[in-house]
Length: 471
Ligand code: ADP
Ligand code: G6P
Image 1 (cartoon, rainbow, N blue to C red):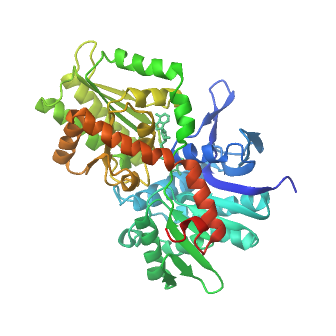
Image 2: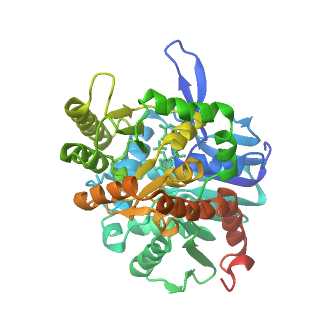
Image 3: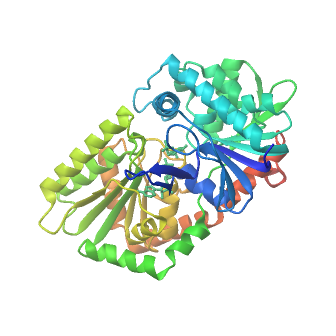
């Protein structure tokens, strides 16, 4: 057998995607999303293995080492991408787990593909894990892996972390195969969630559909027990600050303001182009504030960055059309020659450009209808000016920790407009006080602390780890 590892993570995606250009040349690009942002920082230099998909169809590339990690690609066929990834993961589970913002699609053939791909991931983990190793499985795409892996390798310590919300039982109830998912997850020793409410939803579902005894946060399986609790994820504050504190990024932040014509206020939105993010609600609020005359298109500029995401799933294509129509309308109504009201970019940028945008923005608009955590909110807090203002939806995991933000309910358009105006017009000492409190939270609760805490809880499970006892 090839080299094996004491620490293995499994996530649907590797931290890099293989992209083949029109000239046939291959290149590797950083994969999108918060999971990769967080886990990349955790894994660097740890001498662990990362099991995941390389982002393209067909045969997987050979395993390779990168940035102090061993990357172990798992292949997906065209059909599996359609059925397991775009289908069951992102057109069934994703909407069910995000409050059914859009109607989920249920297809029996997708479930078969989900099972088959989960089996492949479990086998890949079993192949690279050393005797007694720790295997940390991630997110909604791989919920059957813990049980499958335990069957293959009972010697392993198995954890799972959910980066997205876990739905209320009334919504989870809709899911064909709901018992299979709960049983799949209970193959782990420890289950981590973003919020206490998410862990509670899972435990309620276990009670209701598997009729198991649950005491506190521990599920009793007879021969063993599984603990399920909240361990909220965060960002690599120090790493991001190091990017921010370069002359290039500081100069670029000033240049962005100049390029926008030195407006009074720069508003910023940064999201994957996903219907969970409340981008349409945010744009509508901005458009109405311009129409009401509360905002002036020559003085208040909005930058909206939307990373391309899941572009073959219909709900995402529809969203792109709706967003781009709204952007066009707003700019049609309010822009002047050389002075665009809203700058929209459907592109991905490197960390330095993202940090410069955060540093340039006076007001950050984070308005999801539902979000597991939302790392963008924490990134803004780390990079923004001392009197920067964060408008934050109550429906994000981040809202639990970032209570000093300007909180909003994005469904309430009038309320959202009022909160945006409050963030723009608040006295600078109010903004500074709030931001200073937010910064102290984000600078101590880092992604490194999160990983340390998670892994301690995994080792101690079903008991609580030392640092939690009495807390
Ligand atoms: P999600 O995981 O749902 O995409 P998060 O807010 O938790 O949402 O994480 C998104 C991550 O992707 C953040 O690290 C953010 O900086 C990054 N990101 C978002 N938009 C872009 C973009 N256009 N280019 C590069 N990185 C981006
Ligand atoms: C969210 C999910 C991740 C996912 C990411 C990007 O962060 O929690 O599991 O990787 O979005 O989505 P994608 O479908 O492109 O992997």
